[in-house]
Length: 225
Image 1: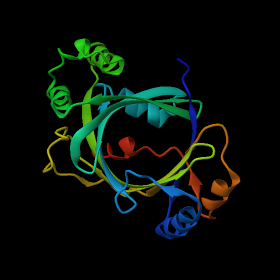
Image 2: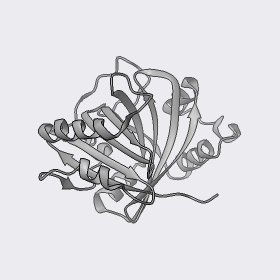
Image 3: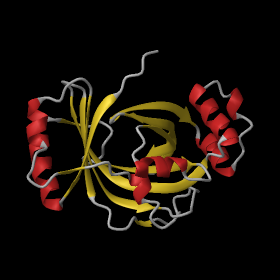
C-alpha cells in the first residue's frame, strides 16, 4: 500500500485574524458534516516514552517522526480512534484504527494482552512499542476545532483554540477529568492539502499577521511537566 503524505501549514493567528479568515472561508468552503454549529470538541490522549521521545523529536525538529494518540469527539466515547501521525520533510500522513471504549480504557489501565489478537495492525504496532519502547499514555489534550472543507485539492482548513491540558491525568474517558488552559496557547490555523493548494484558499487564509511555524498542541500541553 502506497503511503500518501499531505502538505500541512500551521499558523498562529489572532482573534481578529480568525474572524476575518472565517468569513472568507464560509464564502468558498463547505462545512464539515460532523461539526455541530460549525465546531466540535476534541479530546486526545497522547503517548510517549519514559524519555519523552515524541516530545524531544518535535522540539528538535527531527525530520522523520511519529506519535500515537487516542481520540474522540464531543464527549461521545461511542466512536474512538487510535491514530499514528507521521511527519517527513514537512509532510504529514495518518493511520487510524477504531477502538471500543472498553479497549481504550484497557490501554489506559495497562491491560495490553488482548492487543496482539485484535486483528488490527495499528493496535498491534502500538502494543509492540508499548512493550519494547515503554510507550505509555502521557497527557490529555482538549481543544475546540472549527473545520472547513474545499474538495478541489482535498483541502481541509481548521481553527483550533481553547487548548487545555490534563497535566498528568490519563483517564481521558472520565468526563469529570479536570483540564486547565495550556499556558498562553494561541489560536492555531491549519491548512492541509494533497498535490496542490487552490489559489482561492491560499488567498482566503492570507493576512499580514500570519506566523508560519510548527506549533504542537501536545508539546504545548506538556509545559507543566
